[in-house]
Amino acid sequence: MKFLIRFVQLIFLLFPLALLSYLSEQYFVPSGVFEIQHSVNETSPYIDALAPSDRVQQPIKKNDSWSQAIIADPVFFFLHPHRAFARVSFDIWFQNETAPIVEFGGLVRTNPDGYDLQPLHNLLIDKLSWRRITDGTLTLFQKNPKYNSISDFFSNPPKREQVAVYKADYPVALRLSNYEPSSIQKTISVSLRGSHELKTYIKNEILSFEFEYMDMNRDEGSDSVIAIVFDENGKPIADARAADDGNLKRDAVPSEMKKLSLSVPGLSEGVYKVVLNAPRDIFFRKIHTTQNKIVFLNMVYIGDEIGYREVAELVSIWTTSERFQMQTRHAEGVQNVLIDGIEAPISEPYEMFTFQASPELKEVKVPKGDIEIFVDSPIAFAKSQYFVPDPVAIRPYTDIVNSKIEFILTTYNPPRQEGEWLVKTFEFATAPLVFEKNSWKFTFSSPLIEELGAKIIVKEINMEWYKKSRKVGE
Image 1: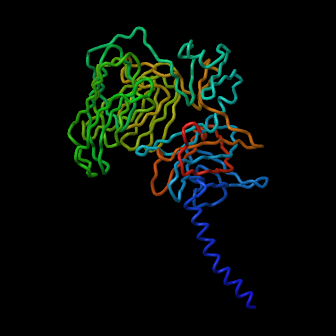
Image 2: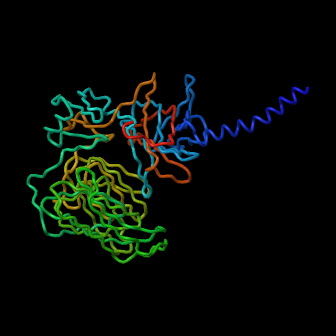
C-alpha cells in the first residue's frame, strides 16, 4: 500500500513536469522546426477547416482515407501560429482530373485582398505532348521543336504572338519599330476607383502623368496615394506620393480635387509599368499624359460619379480580351454593357457576370460606370493607345491547341505522384504574409471550377513551420 501511495505521488509530481516540458517544446521549438500532420477530417488548434462551407463538400472516408472535395472558387483556411516563424512549407495531397488550373497561396495584401499564388496543378500543360526542355528554373514547351536550349530560345526568339507564359517572366524586350513619340497632352477622362496598374511605351520622351483625384472619405482612416514606376526588369526607378486630405472620418464628404504629378526624364526606350497604390476611397477622375501608348492591366474599377458630377458619362474601353467578368456593388450600377455591340447585362449587384467575346480588338461601352471589369488582355481608353506589352498568359480557358501559341515558357513543375494521390510542396516566407488576428490566410484558387462542374479532392495539408529564414543557396 505504501508503495502504491509513493507511486501515485510520483505520478502527480512528474505529470506537471512532463506537461511543462511538452508545452515548452511546443512553444520554443528547440529543433527549429514545428511539424503538423493534418487530415481534412481533423480539428486542430493550428489550422482551420476549409471554408466557406458552401464551396466544399463534407469530408468522406474511403479506403481508410479521409478526403474533402472543393467544388467552388475560392476556398480558404486560416493558420494560427503559436509563436513567431520565418517560413512555412506545405505538402498538399490531392487529386484533380477536371479543374484546368489550380493555384495555392497566402494573403499578402488587403483592401482589396491579394494573394501570392503558386501553381498547384496545371492540367492544360500536363496534358501537352510537346517537347520539353529546362534549365532547372524555366521550362520551355515547343509544339514543333526548334530550340535545343532556353538560351537558344532567348537569343533568337520567335514572333511574340507565338509565345505564351505561365508563372514566368518573358525577358525579351518589346520594341515598336514604327513608334513615334508625342509632346501633345492627352486626357483620359474616366473615374477609376482605388489601385490600378498600367503600362506605357517610352522612346525619346519624358514619362509624364498627372493624376487628378478625390478622396471620397467613405471609409475611415488615412488615404495616401503612391505612383511607382518600374522598368522592364521589374526594378522600381521613380515614384510620386501624396498624403491624406486630412479627413480621417467616414463621413462621405469628398475632398477637393487633388493632383499627383509623375515625371521621369532620361529613360531608355522600352515598356514601363506604373502602379497606382490607392485605397478604395480614392477616385482618379482624370489622367493627363503625353504618352501615345497606355494600357491598363488585368482590371479596371470604373467608379461612380457621386460627388463629382450629377450624370455619369458613358465610358468606352478597347481590348482583345476573350473573357470578361463584371460586377457592380450597388443597385444604381445595374446596366447593360455593350461588348462589340452585343449586350452584356449586369442585372444584379454583388454578382459576378461572365461573358465571352472574339479575340479581335473591340470596343466595350459602359453606360453608367460603377463597375469592376476583369479581363485577360490589356485595356485602353482610346483605340490609338492600345498595344500588347506582354506575351499571352495561360488562363484556365486558354485553347492552347487551336491558338497561335507555339511555345510556352513556365516555372511550373508538376506535382509528384504518391500512389493514387498527387503531392505538391510549397514554401512561403512569412514576412510578406498578412498577419491579422494572430492568423495567416491561405487559399485554393481554381477559376472555372463551378462552370465546368469540376472538383479538387484534398486529402492532407501537412506543414513544417521554421523559426529561421532560408539561407542563400539552401
